[in-house]
Image (tube, rainbow, N blue to C red; front, top):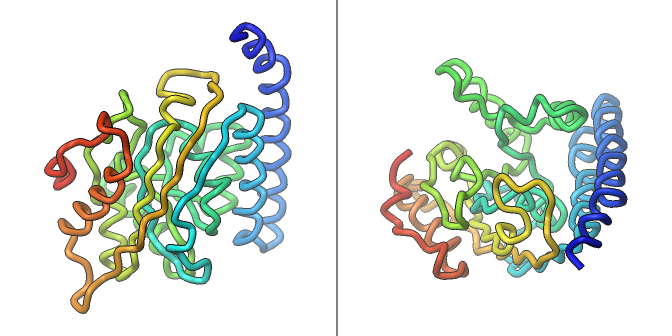
Amino acid sequence: MLLLYRIYQIFIFCPIIVVSTIIIALTTVIGSALGYGRWWGYYPEVIWARIFCRLAFVSVEVKGSGNIDKHTYYVFVANHQGAYDIFSLFGYLGHNFRWMMKESLRKIPFVGWACKAAGQIFVDNSSVSATRRTMQEAEKQLRGGMSLTVFPEGARSWDGNMRRFKKGAYKLAVEFNLPVVPVTIDGAFDVLPRFKFLPRPGHIRITIHKPIHPGCDGHDLTALMEHSREAIASVLPARESTPLSRSRTD
């Protein structure tokens, strides 16, 4: 059975994924160049992400959609189990947003071009000036009324457990006094863990928690990080619940 699935992946899944990626990327670049980047930078990618999931026989279940308002912009923070976190959130979160993503993704043919055209934010921490530019791009999107989605761990998990959270996204939420929405992703590690190249069929569960709104005096950075991490961990299997104290610092 596994052999048949691998044959399917090589001769059907991979070719369709490559072709659809090129088409969606070119559509995004052209649509954004015509001045409709807010729309073209999101909705074609929703289709693309769902193609990735459905062709890999990955089902996605979303809970808590009623906790967010499509007319409000947020900073979404999610745990990062594997590559299918991206496809499940893009395809099924149901809210227009832009990613804060690794700078290395800019180099991927077609994907990097489309991400740049759509206004995705490449996180470059190679120098102080590069980090400043990253934050300026993020601020530009927030000022324009666009939500951001961030993996505060910074990279995919090695073993399914959450890594330490970094402060960058939270600082933006504090600066702009925005609600932070914790999002739990469960099942993506089993579908495609780090250093694997072909996905396995599976079921991914996305839990959208209630937004953490700033108080009268705004957010408290440390409390915000701990609260969001606690919410994310609350619906994860025991293997993924790590001490909250690990999230206090970069």
